[in-house]
Image (cartoon, rainbow, N blue to C red; front, side, top):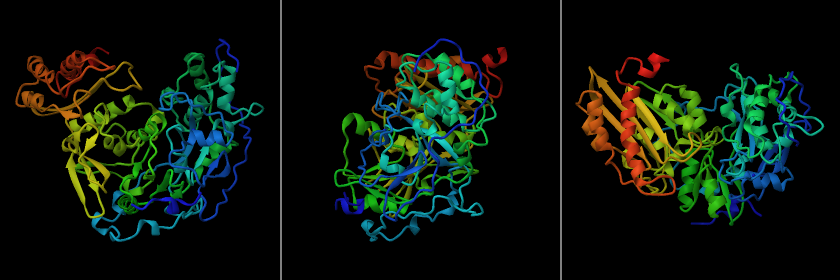
Length: 553
């Protein structure tokens, strides 16, 4: 198969009930010694378990899971093809921190001229994998991040480094994570075990001083062993030893961003290295699918056989990975993952802090981007109601200009948006100061890692006991996520008291056009709308003072 520039069309043991005994950390014996990748200037390749493997000819719809299994690395399994079970988890090396200052980039009117042909771009420019330690542009330390390989396009791994369960250890030389899993009887049929091992290894290498965070395993399902043995194994882990080569790899920069062209006319993949390049490609190939984290598009590929002729990867575009906190707004780059937003904001935006733990699992949040979530325009999306309550706007960029649009005007119909052909979502802006009374309620069949039946986000400003501003975002009750305008009007100017809120709750029950479906009935959704506002008041009866639950705690 030829390069993508040629291919672009014109127009992924035994069980025992004996509890695991905490073990002394051992020096991991790594079966594969990491080597310096060797590449030519036109070869798409990925470093797998320390060795470079060609990606040349890999189509855009080939998942990392399928590609790895074709290489004989069959530890990762397909359990759901939707990113819900974690059996396909692998580790990807990423920069820390991976955020770029917004003021390092040119404004939209300084983009390259419109007549620059997209196909004149060089095929694959390959900067060195390791920047000098004293290079001021070096992104710093790296981290091993667990992702669902069933949703990641294999071609998007070009130039990157990944670890699979086979690279961590072997039956004769177990990695510490594999050792505690085996000693604790934390594996029975073994189908899900490699995924658990990779997710656990990511947390093991995170370097936290707070102990093992079980949230790291929330995206991994086990159908036979039971979670207690797995939990005990996680808590039995110590710290990586000084001889651990994968731990030492974190002290050097992750591979630099590089341009990628691979695939064929049956599915060409082109990664852009800048917004300008992404817009050029999008203009040249109007039917192309733009993919960042791939957590939604991967499902389309796996379950609905989506096979676009061209996929444009924007997962590492620096201009989309900015974060600014200013006096009048917070700007979040559209290419930031939810995990990155959570870490960077560290609770500074309470509504987002409430949202993130309920947004899928960490395995998904490590890849899913804010812009991608909004662009799908799902009526049951969780981020949209929160951002609507925050009165957020989206920044849309094209080759000609940049424009800002209130998020409430962005969704125009079922999975439809006001984004014009040739535009990308560059960022999301949240005005500040933030409201003092906020709350996010997600009603679903499971508490975590599930799709909403109803999602309600509210931001209310109360001054001297009177509501001066109310913004409420709803999901799951209409063909798009919507603002509850009538309820907002019923609250504003009224005292923040239960009787007033009860009246507004009656109005809220009439918002939207909820339907009966397999997740919930319309009547149930209507009932949940009303109770959500009453709960918000119960949690914040006297703004500025502790809630009743906090007083009695």
